Image (cartoon, rainbow, N blue to C red; front, top):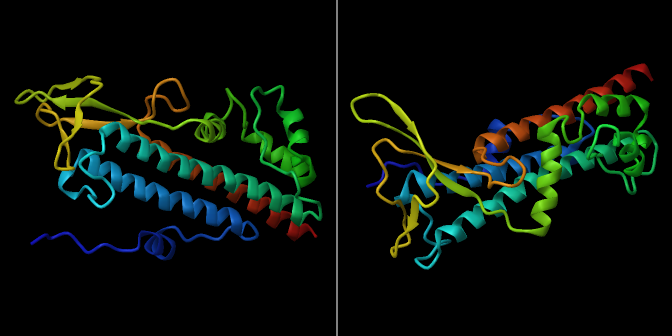
Length: 256
């Protein structure tokens, strides 16, 4: 008999016990961040089943004909869901800022720029200037451009990528401990994971104490970075930004 706990509603647990926070007027952004965390939990469980616990692989979703590449593509789609919700949280916040200032939120977006010099133009092009000069000043402190705040800018870049091509995650054998010596070896092996005819994901003869990493593919945002920890950092970054603008709104209210 398995000693694993019965399945639970992850989203319900997350909202009521772990992820509940109050962003005041930015309720839409809060919900988008919560959705991003839900997708991140789903992705984390899928990755754990893929590389660490083959027996728990969900055979209802993955049959014996599913290749490792297809599994990684499915994980890539989950990454896209996380990224899209984080990007939407920023856009909804921008619209709420304008709306709460008495302006028209139509056509308003959180601005990103390819360069620092081009940010002022993007602020106008995305109508973020309707949010007020104090909001524009706060936005600039977050440097949402390439070469500035890389986390924020790469959310924007990856969101665009996900709309035009599938994101295929990479899997690498990143390290193992040499038995008896404690020495850690670091490697990168393209094909260390195979999908067997039974529908179970297994490692192909890994060295002892192998550590497997699921990472972002080369040639794009976050290239080579481990997926889960990177996404967790992005969730925190967006949450910090939204909370900062919520505090700005509170300061406005106290003055008025």
